[in-house]
Length: 163
Length: 158
Image 1 (cartoon, rainbow over the protein chains, first blue to last red):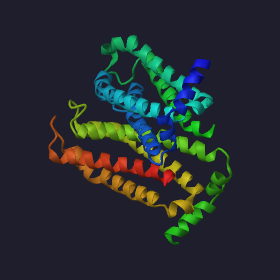
Image 2 (cartoon, one colour):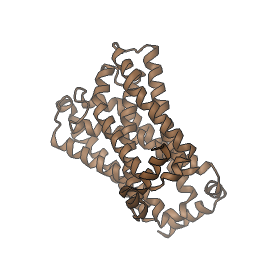
Image 3 (cartoon, helix red, strand yellow):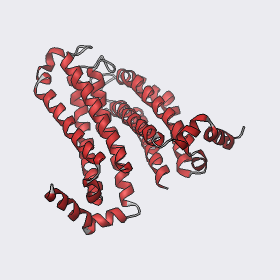
Image 4 (cartoon, helix red, strand yellow):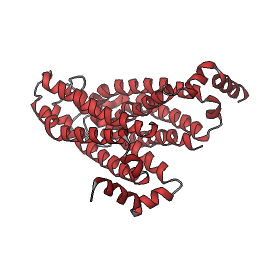
């Protein structure tokens, strides 16, 4: 923990971090990119989750939708992580002690874990249920957990500013 | 009542009072606004990328459009309602904010476009490869909605 805190201090006090933090426009622009990237990341994942819950796009098979949507989600993830890392760099020392930031990271890891479990188990047998309007209960649970966790990431992310 | 009068009335309404005096009101409503943004953005991306012929080419564009229209309209409703609540907290400031006015203009344009020319383009795309007009419609739609988002960010920053 001391090491992590030290790393955060170093990032915070670095000239790049300071420049970002004190910039007039750079930080705001990066933050805007980060906020708008939730459409590309969470929005697309949500579309897939809502399909698995049988609420939208019922005529499209889950695998076909996933094949189209997941590259978008990954692109969104790349943009979110890149912009997020820069934002973190600028405020690293403050983020270390921010409970909402820590919660956000935990929720992010859990969301990733949820996706990993899904892709290595129930999704392996997707061909059996991909065209069903009502997916197997495990897929639906994954979808609900995914929506909750990603919603939590967004909420925790917004709450960072309040701590 | 003048437009300015409506803004004042909103600020003085029970909603306005609640938003202005509550400690957590603005934060919570803003979070709802962000969640709606994710869903609205996701549905717009799916439809417009299909219209551009980038994804889901095996499905007809109108099928995709219809498949996400409920999500799009529900998330849009959430954003408008939460947006009104956010507005009631600082109606006076927003009335004079160029970013806010820009956002409202772009939002109106995006909505009109969605219910008219965009819908037409969706119906016209029969085959896998869309022609020029559907592609233009998709790009216009994406730019308008992106503009709404950017202007929205600018409200808080300018």
